[in-house]
Each structure stands twice: as structure tokens, then as C-alpha cells.
Image 1 (cartoon, rainbow, N blue to C red):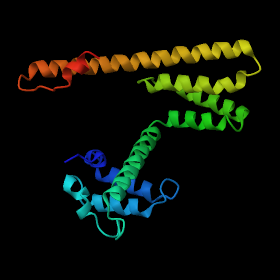
Image 2 (cartoon, rainbow, N blue to C red):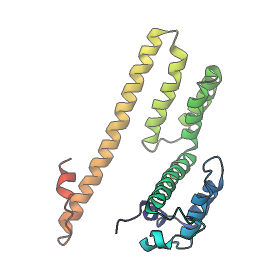
Image 3 (tube, rainbow, N blue to C red):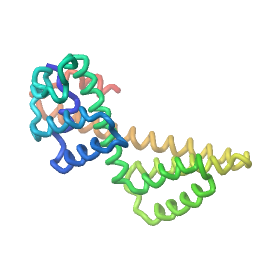
Image 4 (cartoon, one colour):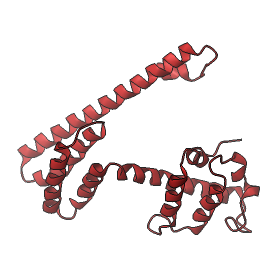
Length: 211
């Protein structure tokens, strides 16, 4: 049986995260389909194990897939839409946990409507960022986004625009390099795991190690 992607994520959720996801789904701003809310409420009854059988067509209650819609096609659409909203919820959660990045994204959007206001806001955010301890690659992403916003301010000054564009490219290269290094370290750990566990063999490990 093909494993359901949403169940794989939901198994890792705490009870609070599950309730937050339901709250997210009940908001008409994010989701206007009541059947998706009912579907996740139904799945919540299987927390935290979520057996794969619970998403088989014959197991789905009639109030979620009523008569005439109890087809594999309708269930596939329901699963796909639910997984899309689940990814959206996770990304929303992640950005909420990075308030500085949240402010930068908000400023990026604001720059399209009021560039001068966006610039003032960005300067405030930058001041806050400088007072914080830089701990991960999100800081490089912040630099990149902040520079991207400033492009709006440089349209009348070609020399300034050229400098900002180069700064953006340099920061993006650095962001890419750091993430490649992190990935490389993870691969080394996988190699050691494979060497130390003689009974363990992943058929895709050779391809991963040569990547």
C-alpha cells in the first residue's frame, strides 16, 4: 500500500500542533472547503498512530465524501488539497517562529505599495537584527531579502543599483554555499552510520554519496 504523505507528517505532530492545524483549516482565509476540515477532524481521531487503513476509500465517512463523490478520484483530490494546506501551515509556523524574517517578508510586500514606508521599516528591522546573535542560515537569507527590498530605492541611481545587485548575488552565493556544507556534513554522518551498522544497507546510499 502506498503511504499517505499527510499521515507521515501528522504522526510527528504533538496534540497542540494538531489543534493548531485544525484552527488553521477552520479559518476561511486559508481554507474555504469544509470537507477538508471534516477530513482532518476524522484523522485526528487516530492521533498519534494514524494507521494507513484510515485513509482507504471505504473507511472515509459519508459526511466527508457523500454519495456520488465516493470515488478514488475525489479522495485523491481531498488528500492532495489537505497535503497542500499542511505544507502551507508548516511554512506559516516556521516563519512565525522567525519574527525577524516575518518582518522582512512583510516589508518586501509593503515595498510594492509604499517604498518609503518600507525603507523606514527595513531600517528598524536591520537595527534589531544587528543586536541579535546570528545563529543560522536564515540570517544570510535576511541579508538577501533586505538587499532585494532596497533595489526599489535605487532605480534612480544606476551606480547604487549595481552595488546592491552585486551584494544580492554575493549573499545568495553564501547562502547556497552554507547549505551545501550542511548537506555535506549530513551525508558524512550517513556514511558513518552505514559503515558502523553492518546489517544496514540503503540501496540508494551509493547515489547519495556520489551526489
